[in-house]
Image (cartoon, rainbow, N blue to C red; front, side):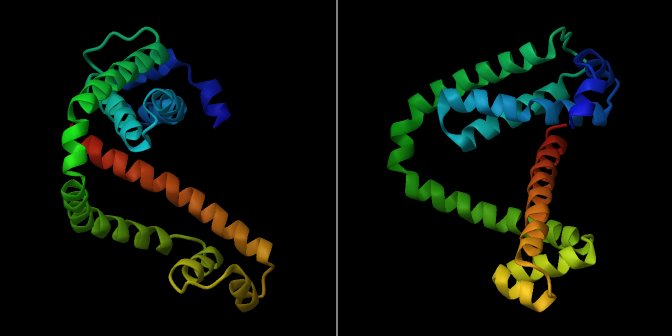
Amino acid sequence: MKNGHVLHSNESLLNRLKENDLEAFNLIYDRYWSVLLNEAYKRLEQLAICEEIVQDVFIELWQQRHNRDIHNLEAYLRSCMKFKVFEAYKRNKKTNSLLEANRAFIDDAERVEQDLYAEKDLRSFIEEWIAHLPQKRKEIFKMRYLDELSTKEISELTQSSQNTVQNHLGISIAKLRKLITRHFFFFILILFH
């Protein structure tokens, strides 16, 4: 991705973003997601809230792409993130006692909602992703995560070294993690567009 960073200046990405260029948005997202998440985490130390804040920053960037005159992309994104961290801090401070009193109820409600909607969507997304894997990688992934075989057992069944099996799994998991993050981010983006 370093080449993408070199070839695309922030200024050119901002110009393309104003022209509704989703690829430019993706490059900005890839370039600044972890930077913003790390900065937010230093302040709040609550990963889920920080991820939500960073998602909100990018959703707002997309929604306001025609209305904002941004001269320094990184400074703009950091300022938005800091403002949202401050809002979250104020909101959390006021509601912490109420949340603690109702934590079990909230957790149950969140689990039910997530189970009903996200699990079905995630399962179909993963099944489709598995179908497009190269044959060997698909076979190894299914054996490990669907059949729950150890890497040693898979290595014996496929007549591959255990390192090869682990490499296939590592590549698969890394790609799946990235795709899931993007999939759900764009789902949220579409909802708020």
